Length: 333
Image 1 (cartoon, rainbow, N blue to C red):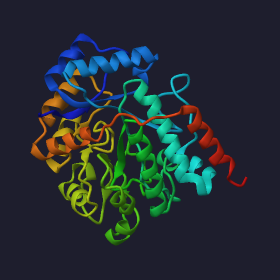
Image 2 (image 1 turned 60 degrees about the vertical axis):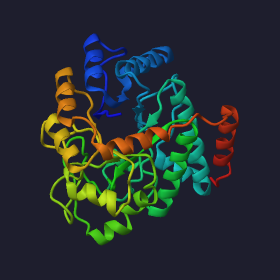
Image 3 (image 1 turned 180 degrees about the horizontal axis):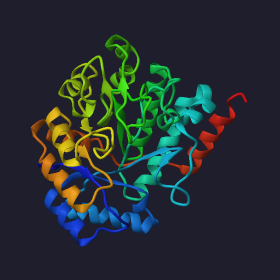
Image 4 (image 1 turned 60 degrees about the horizontal axis):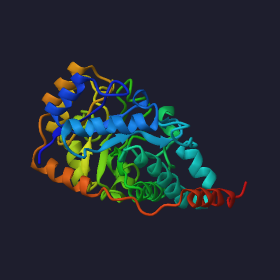
């Protein structure tokens, strides 16, 4: 089965007739939800059903539910969480256990609403110069520690029937600009990147899905990683990531072209799927047309990612909450 090489969003709480027609024709691999799509549990489940009905299959539906500043679902739909960096620091020696429980609880909330993917974990490294839009969303500054926490987060999601999306490959932590608004450049030499920024992603290269970073790595290529065949080859060969590789949102200002031009360039560079958010119906149509259908390797990775979805394991919410509380209380104040 071939899919459209895109992930698209909706403008409101339910699909319009025009959106249903577009999704049926374009057959996007999956969908992404934003706060504007979220009202009540029944409404969210109905919207997810409409999306899947439009493409005639159990398409993955993802969301940004990192916890902290970046979480689309808020009370009463879902728990509020501290930022990941603050949570990791507060958990201290119990951070791995805390992150598994945190993301297992998040998975439980998502799965109950019909959402079966989450744009997490983040394996970017936090540094003194990391832009504030990213810094406290990170899990730490040490590659080995970040890899352990990201692995625990990914496992918590998988245990709850939710596909994790590893981001932002090959590493966004050195960005001193917000890629939503400008194109960051990273000047570090390759040898340093290999030992630091790339290392957590190498340790997590077996995860089923990942998201690119809209950054230029000056020592490797003058083009943004999302649009660079050389950088995508590095992600595949040197980092070893063979999961489904989706772009970060191609409408972000870090990329100079139109969304359709960016989609075409990203797929040509070797990305499997172009993520496009917050566009008009006409722009979504143009992006789907530019991205086209998945090629053989992308289809293989897509099938493998979908096969990683599982029925959630037995889960006692109250016991998990109590266990997380106990982990946090064990840490010295």
